[in-house]
Length: 258
DNA sequence: GACGATGTTGGCAC
DNA sequence: GGTGCCAACATCGT
Image 1 (cartoon, rainbow, N blue to C red):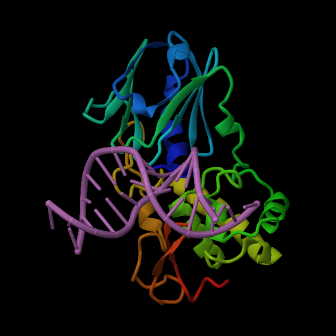
Image 2 (spheres, rainbow, N blue to C red):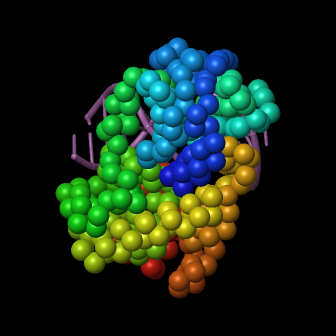
């Protein structure tokens, strides 16, 4: 489910948890834990924020950090199912962690975990000059670079494809050879697609929902992602699917050049 | 039933 | 530093 716009939507739908105290944590599937959550017991939730694709609960002591993987969900007052792996009982209400594929992870630490500290800049905050300099320093394929969380934090398969299409850049283009003008176009395409996706509450391509069970609608605005064989909105050519960096990649061969 | 694909990441070999 | 391959897992479509 979860790239930056979906995680941002979940975080916004969890804002009401500020001030709540975590009274109990029941873990039903230990696979989704990194380390122990003992330190989070009895703590009060001070803030709920996002860093890249991570959800960060700032507690009065330490941080509870959640990554949703592919199918993770945080649900307020939802239904407990066979895929509910953690149950947070609060002083008011219950927060469930549900994740059919179990690729997501929850961890607690006094400080933000290293994997969060190592993330690249936020795509909605980085300036064009910094973006271009970082881009130019890399020799990898553009799609792989956009998926690299140490380069930019928060883009995933959907928004990487959508941003590259909007910027007219081929997913296999070499990052170091992108012109300043193309780079500028990509920087604003990323900002635009993420901003629009957040406004649409994310993309629900299979079963993504926010913490209140609401679906997003940005899947209706996808121009290339999972539109293989459909006509390009720009030129009418057929949208292609290929593999780049082992990920299904959708693009228009006519509009996106290396 | 088999097979391949799915929003992610992490490890390992080269 | 970069690439390729595999792994984790459940579900869905062909």
